[in-house]
Image (tube, rainbow, N blue to C red):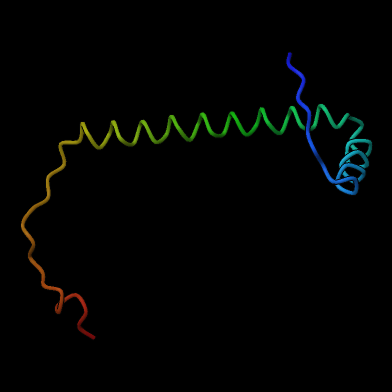
Length: 76
């Protein structure tokens, strides 16, 4: 595991440590969990985007002729 140094405002650090203590964990563990969750979500989002592109490329859907006019769509 690698160590990382962060520059954090003192009041934020105090509050974050208090939250960690309330949760019976460490600030280090909270930051690690946050980053793991962030990486997991980004990975899922990337896979979803790749899947959408794949579906679009392999789609056999066809667009038929336009049977409407703009004015007809906006009639009140």
